[in-house]
Amino acid sequence: MCGIVGYVGTREAYPILISGLHRLEYRGYDSAGVALLGECQQQISVYKAKGKVSALEEVAKDKNCSGSIGIAHTRWATHGEPSVINAHPHLSESGNFALVHNGIIENFSILRDQLNTKGYTFKSATDTEVLVQLIEYYEHKHHCDVISAVRYALNKVIGAYAIVLIDRRQPDTLIAARKSSPLVVGIGEDNQEFFVASDATPIAEYTSHVVYIDDEQIVKIERGKEMEISNLQAEHVDVDVTEIDVDLNMLDKGGFPHFMLKEIFDQPKCLEDCMRGRLEAMDKRLKIEPENIQYGINLSAVNLYGDRLLKAHRFIIVACGTSWHAGLIGKQIFETFCQMPVQVEYASEFRYRNPVINPDDVVFAISQSGETADTLAAIELARSKGAFVFGIVNAVGSSIARNTDTGTYIHVGPEIGVASTKAFTGQLTVLTMLALTLGHKKGFLSDKDFSHYTEELSKIPSMIEQVLKQNDHIAEIAKTFTYAHNFMYLGRGWNFPVALEGALKLKEISYIHAEGYPAAEMKHGPIALIDADMPVLFVATHHQQYQKIVSNMEEVKARGGRIIAVVTEDDEQVRAIADWIIKVPQTLNFLAPLLSVIPLQMLAYHVAVRKGLNVDMPRNLAKSVTVE
Image (tube, rainbow, N blue to C red):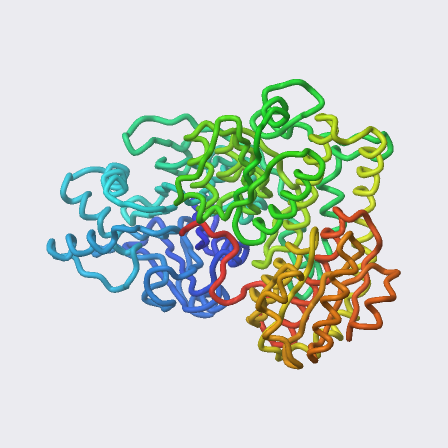
């Protein structure tokens, strides 16, 4: 959940570290800190601040920030409240080591008690300080080098970690390690400088060559030398360098006041990028091509991957949060076009059950970041039972991409806003392309229908452009609901998961309690909540249950409820019932969620902005949930 940056090289480290922290601030913003070391320094300079990275800059502006090696951290608190004392980096008792850490050391309390008996004292309430003290303890106990001390310590801890450590006695060396928490190393020219980070976003402007560190690996990074990677058993591991291509424009707001609004407006282009090379409406073809040797699928060829999908007896979708909502729509798409039994599971529950998984099942793992801890654990469980695992992720080179049998990227670019927007529509687009391709290959879709559906899918980006033109109208509606205390979202069929997603967006960034329900379930309890103070948003585009959802609206109206309705642009019936309407273009029923979700994203955004809240960094949330 936290953001880590490290640098060793020939430049001043501080500007690079601060820039990196700003790029990673979406991963945590309770506190921030930096540790710096120059060749002639006798001690590590550590500066910390509660709050955002800007607060750290204020603290450090009059301090000595020189040094060509350093580590930095932006925190999302787990152990210990947000405070300067609990902020990273943490120093060992002697001051020799400084450490930053993302993850949770589950047995930290036991280890702290053991270290207390050996004379170690602790300033913070964090598990991280326990780890840095443990490393120092093993260095003294075994009279060993730092790498060995780190290895001893990591063999004792239980939990997840990504760590970077500096030693004041070695002003040209970084030590990094990971388990169940992401870490990437960027390589500069001639090994004269190296960059370490939680993901590639702070590295991309300096180098395109990176190494993704795998679980239980330790890296020694020394200026002017090739990095050395070993495992917890002290066995050498070969370095696998990957070339990345990150659009740096995606990492800036581009004139928008917030990343979330930019990413909402990015969706037409992002979905075009998602379809590019896969959807060719002019030739009436759709294809999912290989993206690299390990990660891609080409169903136009008879190969292992296509065969496993085509012959599967069941699909299981595992995901969390917004990705789970995308999975609910994916279930309907696969069932409709592939005649395939599909179940959708919260990865956080799936991993702790004893689910029935068979070797002829295909498990789809959906995650924007590709680092979601619960989804990674669900993948491990599925593979242990012989299932074939297909990843649908956004972040290239992420852990899920490297731990699934195959999969596809959604290609919507980095998503910085904590509340997911373009990743959701990208996930839906990929699920739709997969389902149409499989359905056609399996003979459930005729050539005529397949051609028609793919052509309609290709029109979605331009239709989203039309919806985005209503931004001012939606902002005006938001004025009425700025101080609402509760909200209900209702939808049916394809739009029920959209109602869930709309409610989640409002909760995440405006802190208004909101719940999503199937509209037909309203009379089974939620209708008791309806009064003039309970706004109800209906996702009511034309579909097979349209008249039924109109009846639900009448029931809400009869009880004094205020109605916002997302409707198809030619709708006149709902216009006479609803207090406010937001129109979306007419499309095929199964494609409607790609349009109907856009107004819900914008409504949540504008309500939060009118409340004066930071929509990109909502309280208590972080972008990537890499710990339980």
